[in-house]
Amino acid sequence: MGMIDLHNHLLPGIDDGAEDVSTSIELARIAVEDGITHLVCTPHIHTGRYDNTRQTIQAAFKQFQQALQADNIALKVAWAAEVRFGLELMEWAAMGTLPFLGEWQGKKVLLLEFPHNEVPFGAEKLTAWLIGRNIQPMIAHPERNKGIMNSRSKLKPFLDQGCLLQVTAASVAGHFGETAREVALELLQEDKVTILATDAHNTRHRPPQLKEGVRAAAAVIGEKKAAELVTLNPWTLAQVHFSS
Image 1: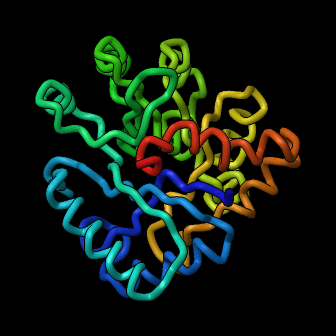
Image 2: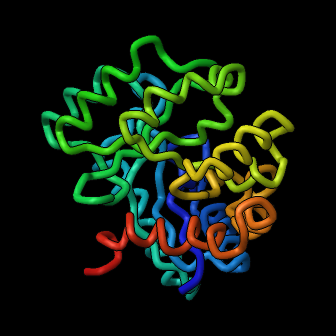
């Protein structure tokens, strides 16, 4: 099995990622070239900005899937979402409309995004509420959150609860600046990272590539552990999407 990417914005026209199907296909080719074989598309659900629902995501996904087949691109794909932190989450959880990234140790996994500038005050109350309902939050790119960059202790309550962490491969490789790289490496050294993912948005600045980040991680935690962050762990989490 090749590498598995569980956070990216390859679906056409529904958020700030690929703007159309041809861009989606271009990104898919880059992913395959990098050694990615499985990919779960995770468009933003962000109230007031990207008001995506299961329906809008599924429609974009169908378009993407058909284009992959038409172009004969060997990439296995599924869909979920990157959900922005907010109280609407409680309503969606209660209604059963949250798209889950997969499952981890018997809990459903939600890819959860905090605002970029901060960790909201009292956020751990909402994550505790989710965990109490068998929903496991996986915090997206904590190493790029300004609140966490300024104070690593902001992550502690979430780690204590058992929240999972997804770190961006490009952060480990230094493409998001020195602070993001330092935080990413520290989290790797402390064995706090569950998966590395691309968070790909476009072909030039944020392509769907994992290899370089895995190499940079291997220099710190060894090749076997680094490889597991893009193979074994994401597969354990997302195989529910691919096993049918």
